Length: 257
Image (cartoon, rainbow, N blue to C red; front, side, top):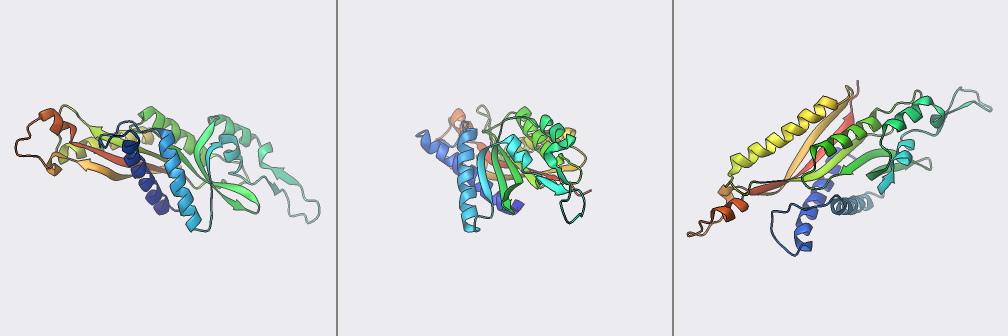
């Protein structure tokens, strides 16, 4: 799956999740501040499945995938030790010391969404997707980022790691209820937030791991865009209506050194 394809799918799923969250709460208040990880995961899986069906089911999409199984599918089960034609010796990936060392470094549990392809009748892991609830704690983003880069960096001599990339997706909502915010205010807060993420991730990135942050506005309502009645002067109400909400995709990949 290309980055372009995933970006389009994920941005659409995050936007749908944000909008549907208002409807399910029986409120069309655009200041959505409660948007769960599970709700986004379901919508993202639906969007991925629709895309997959239009592309002849090239991929296998699994929610709540067990980490060990996903990791195991990053490598061939075995390879031939020699070119001997008859009864060649086999080397099993799972018997190599690096196999257990790698998996012990990766948190046990489940992956939010796992993407794989079927090659020679076996599942081959290609992408990992971690979903966060709206306005996630930076420590949680750091935890998922570190986990994904450990998957990408996992190495077993003689075996190729099939994992191509990983993604962390969520929605960020910015609103200051005690201040009327113009476009410049909202832009500065957005950039400040992204700067904190970059600083945190850059401080823990392996030398062979790189990341890119993609964003897309879902709602952007600065003061300049408001349609105010002539006699509308309720400061708190106007401040409440100035906000922004945008999708965030952190793409993580291995560098070709």
